Length: 329
Image (tube, rainbow, N blue to C red):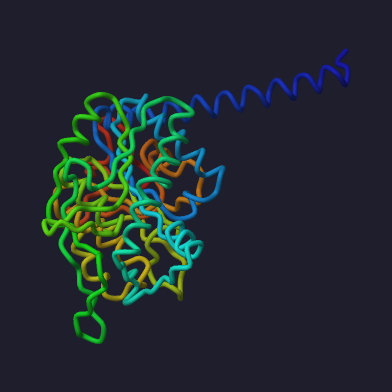
């Protein structure tokens, strides 16, 4: 005779088995990707809501440690615009923007350096090192990692000086490579030196792309606060799963101001030899792991091939993996 207690125990046991089986299935799905990307460098631009929500921050740190233990070599590049604005307000310094770029005076660049290299960077390093002591923080000024020259904003077709804002013109990844070889996770703030002796505030998306190219990374991943690149925003919320560099180049002029630097970074990376660049929704916990270790992936992927490869021919699909029914990510 079966009692109610027996039924309850059986139901709980079945539920546990189902959960265990689902976890095993996830691990099996990840196996070909673990093999494909073992020993590869992945540059991740960290920003948006993922930097401010405590649960997402912890999840991101866990992702980095997982990547490191899985045999990948993650490198993080970050900005911190909202944090800079907050500190400027505390100091009574007004923030001014021209053509979407922060006008950076000598007084402002001191705050930018302090906040990005001294506060935001160390917060990220400390969070990762709670799990394992892998992370080491650097500024783009360290060991001449990034060299920049003054950038002019274009307003109504005319160049306008916006102060100590720079475009990266040279990247020396040797310090990053040494840290990677030592098993560390470099965390880089987006500040650069200039040949003129000045320090420049540089866009973190641009910096991440430059570093991905210099390191010969397998992927550039850009975390943002949208699902990916929308096909026809705001008329539609359909996300473009995959497109070529050529297709992206045609779309760029019509994109929203916020998406342009992110998609330009993806284009720069792919044109520079990085096989794949991705824009992911950083509001999704473990977004990085979902992109790298699942068959379907998430967000928008930019690749160099033209025309787009067939699903079974996509280099993103590991040899022997079954790509039927899913986008080859």
